[in-house]
Image 1: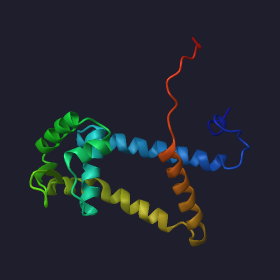
Image 2: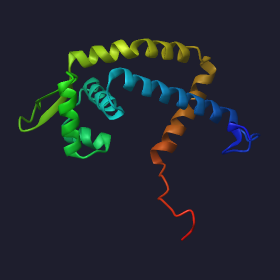
Image 3: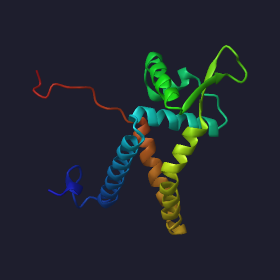
Image 4: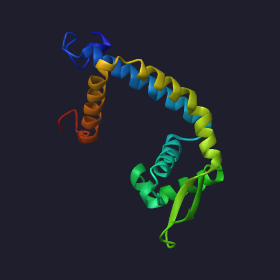
Length: 166
């Protein structure tokens, strides 16, 4: 049985696309593990920095509570994470711009520089590859990827079950 046919009949329509998607996801996961290892952090740290930078780019004020919600971790855990990332020089806590009772999380210049240094070439190559998709195929590619994202956003993982049926 080929890896393409494990979940689907090897002759099923779309199997080649799903196999390519699986290869992409595996390569991306390998890249992320390598990035995390090279940065000397854990995956949650890197994802936290990504959320903070994305919020900044959107002009949003991200509180520690907001970050805890996005990471799906407790506020106690996010406090530990923020202490660690502040110690690395990646994040700062600053007063909320409109509510001085709150604190927001900001990426430091050091964090922005490290992200740019480590990811700029990858993003440039991704843009080059995307630009190479023939114009008449782009709507189909975007539609497929959006549909897959929607599927995963709404998917639930089955509850644990007893394989023995007891």
